[in-house]
Image (cartoon, rainbow, N blue to C red; front, side, top):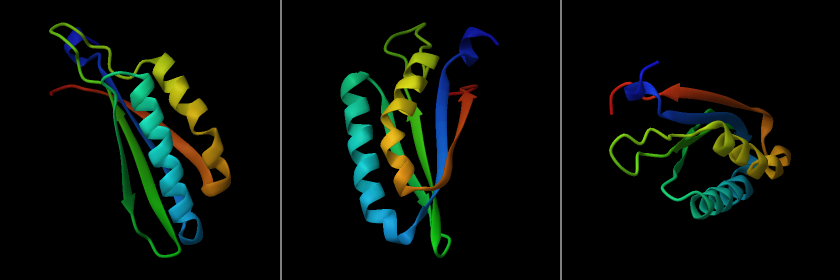
Amino acid sequence: MNAAMAARELFVWYRVRRESADEARAAVATLQRTLRAEWPGLHARLLARDAGEAATWMETYSRPAASAGDDRGVDETLEAAIAAAAVGLERLIDGPRHVEAFAVVVA
C-alpha cells in the first residue's frame, strides 16, 4: 500500500436492544468524548440503524492528517485504546463488537 492509502479508519458495529439504548448511548458518548480528549485530532461518531427490537449501531473513528505527509490515521495503538475504552459496553450490547479497518484511498 502506498503512502496515499496508508491512513486507516475504524468501523465498529454491534447490536443494541431497545431497553439498553439510552444507557448505551450515554456510555458511547462518554467513551468517545474521553477518547477525543486523549487523542488530539480524533473524529468519533455514532451511527444507528433501527431494526425493531434491536438496532445496529456503528462507531466510526478517523484521525485526519495534521500536516502534509502525515498519514497517521487510526493505528494499532489507538485501536487498542478504543477497544479498552469500550470494555464497559459489553453488558449493554447484544453480542460482540465487530471491528473493521479500512484504508483511505481517496480523501
